[in-house]
Image (spheres, rainbow, N blue to C red):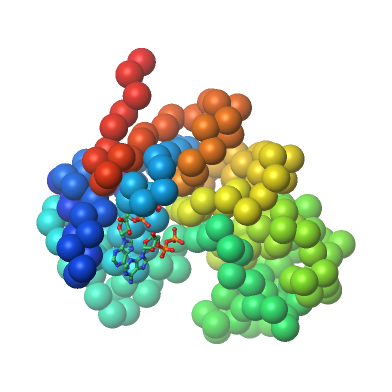
Length: 222
Ligand code: ADP
Ligand code: ADP
C-alpha cells in the first residue's frame, strides 16, 4: 500500500552529475518522512522525480498508482495536480495578494468563483493567515510567506505534500511553526515528504528519517 515507491532509481544529469544512485524507497499512505543529507546529496532531485520535474535514467518511480518513468502530457499534469509542493524560497507572485496567490491554482484549474472562495477559507485557516488574506507577499515575514505557500500547496486537497527545504530561510521559531503545520496536515491524512539538513528539527519532530549522501540512500538503524 505504498503511495510512493522508488525502485532501484538512478539519476545522472546531462553534465555527468550523479544525483541519485540505485535508490529504493517505499512510503506508505499517511506517512511523514524526512529526507536529510548535506547540500548536493540529491534531496531536491528525489522530490523532482516525484513530481515529474526530472526523469530517472534507471529504475521506476511510482506515485499514487502512476509510473512517472513513462507518464507524459495530460496524464502527467493530472498527477501533478494531486501533489502539493512547497519550496525553500516560497515562490509567491509578488504583485498578488495572499488570497490571489492561493486562489491562483484553483482558478487555473477552471473552478467556478464560488467554489474557489469556499476552498480558500479552510486553507488560509489551516496556516493561520485568514487575517492576512489581502496583504501582499512583501508585507509578510518569511515565516508567513512560507505559510502562504503551504496554503497554496494544499488548497486543491492533494493526497501528497512535498516540501523542499521549507525551513531553509527561516529562524528556529518559524521553522518549528512550519513543521507543526506539516504535522497537522499529516494528521488529517496527507502523506508528507520533507527535505531538510536541519538535524535539530528532525530530532524535535520524531518522524522517520532517511539520509542521502552523494546520491546514496541510508536508513538509520533502530
Ligand atoms: P540537494 O537537494 O541535496 O542539495 P540536489 O538534488 O540539488 O541536492 O543535487 C544533487 C547533485 O546533482 C549535485 O551534485 C548537484 O550539483 C547536481 N544537480 C542538481 N541539479 C542539477 C541540474 N539541473 N543539472 C546538473 N546537475 C545538477
Ligand atoms: P534547489 O531546489 O535545492 O534550490 P538547485 O536547482 O538550486 O536546487 O540546485 C542545487 C544544486 O544543483 C546546486 O549546487 C546547483 O549549483 C546545482 N545545479 C542546479 N542546476 C544546475 C545546472 N543546470 N547545471 C549544473 N548544476 C546545477
